[in-house]
Image 1 (tube, rainbow, N blue to C red):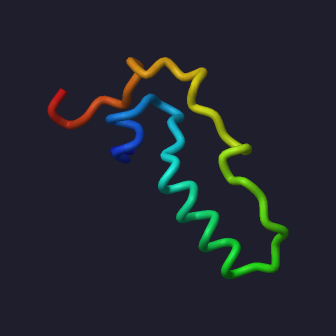
Image 2: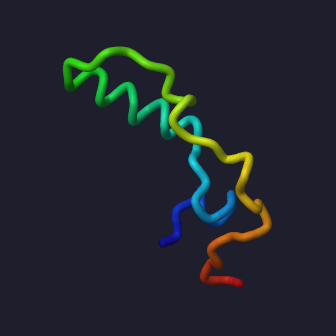
Length: 57
């Protein structure tokens, strides 16, 4: 698990740009009611010092 979001952000971090891209793909592919994707996740409670180790650390 070496996703940039888990090695640069905290474990469990939601990348807002990725969430938007994923939402746009689902909205295009399925008949869903529009909603604000940012209302479904939060990063403010995460300890940003807790990261997934990379191969170099």
